[in-house]
Amino acid sequence: MEERTRAYLRGRFRDHYRRKTWSSEPSGEARGRRTELTPPPDHEAREWGYIPWTAGPTTMVRHQSLLELGELGDFLRRERPRHVYFSAGRYDDPGADDMDAKGWRDSDLVFDIDADHLSGVDPQRDSYAEMLAAGKDEVRNLLDLLEGDFGFEELTVVFSGGRGYHVHVRDEGVRELDRDERREIVDYIRGEGIDRDAIQRTEMGGTATRRVLETEGGWGQRVHRELLALADQLLELPEDDALDRLKEFDGIGDGRAKTILGAVSEDYEKLESGNIERGGQGIRELTKVMTQKVVAEESAAIDEPVTTDLRRLIRLPGSLHGGTGLEVTRIPRDEIDAFDPLSDPVPETFEGHDVTVEVNEPGPVELRDESFTLPDGDVSVPEYVAVFLMARGRAEKGKE
Image 1 (tube, rainbow, N blue to C red):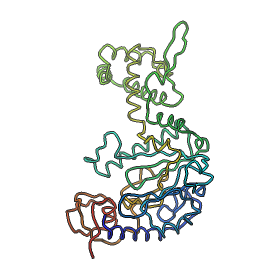
Image 2 (cartoon, helix red, strand yellow):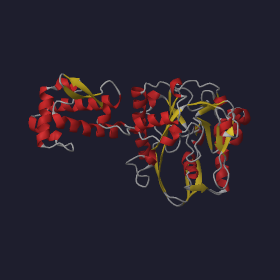
Image 3 (spheres, one colour):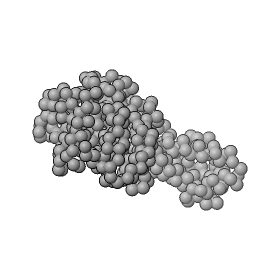
Image 4 (cartoon, rainbow, N blue to C red):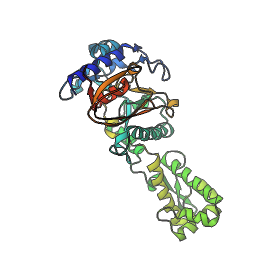
C-alpha cells in the first residue's frame, strides 16, 4: 500500500470516528448501531490493542488499558487505527506487559466463524457475498446450539467487518471455564465424537436389553426429531415410494427397507419414545446414517483456537475493519436474518460522493445492493467502494 493511500484511509477513518458518539454503557442491541460507540462490559478490566496505519510489516500495539489509552472516543479520533481490539479476558492489571502479571479473573466465551474456512466454500470460486451468506448459516446453527442445548442467554452477535462473525457469551457460569472445558464445548458444537453410540443408552426391558435414544435434549433429541419426521413422511407415502425413500440412505437395501417400514408402521409409538431396538439392524443403521446427516447439517464450524484462548483479543463493535473499511457491527438477535453484511456495515461517512482510484486487481465488487465490474487503471467509484478496494489492496488512491 502506497503512503498516499494510507494517508487517505487514516484521514477518513478519523472522520468516521469524529461522527461517533461515546457511551460508557451499552444502550441496547437495537439502538445506535450507526452512530453510537459503546465498550464491552467491564471495559476498564480488559486489555486493549490496535494496529496503526504504518508501512512495512503489521505491528500490533497491545497490553494497553483504557487508563493508558484514555477515553475511547478520543483515542480513536486521535490515533484513527487500522484495527481495534479488546480482550475476552478480564484482569486485575490489564495494562501489564507480562501476561502472567495481569492477574486473570475470567473470560467471555467467544466464538469465531470465518466464512472462507468453511467446508464447501472456495474463496477462488465463491464471491464475497456468497461466502458471507454461508457464514450466516453457520451463525444460525451456532445460536441454536448455544441457546437450545446450553441455555445461554447473554449473547452478542457481531459481524466482524471482514470474513465472518463473532458471538460473545457472557453468562456468569461460563466465564471461569478453563481451556479444556471450553474445548469440550467446541467439540460439542462442531459435532466431534457425536455418533449413534454417543446419543443412545441401554435399558433393561424384561429379560432383554434395548437401545434407546437420549430424547430429552442435545444431539440425541435432534436425531430423534429427524427420525420421527422421516417416519411421518414414510407413513404418508405409498408402500413402494416409502421403500424407495428408505433405500436412498447408505446401507439400506431392500431387506432393511422392508424391516424399517414394518417397524414404523406397527410400532410408531416405540420409535416415538426413543426405542430403536424394534426393527433390528435396519433401524439402528438408519439411526447411524441420520446421526451423520444431522451433525453435518446442524453443527457449527467454529474456530477452536479463538474459543479456547483465555487471552484472545477480539474486534471492537463500532470500529472499522482496516481490511475492508466496513464497520464491525452488532446484530440484534431478531435481525440476523435481515442483516445484509454488504450493506448494513457500510459507514455513512463514506457515502454520498465518488473517489478516483487506480485499480491494480480488476474484477467484480458487490456493495450496497450494487455490482461493479472494475477494469485496470483509473476509475471513479462511490467512496465506500474505493475504501473497500484500497483497504483490500486492490487499488491505490488516485493521484490528485
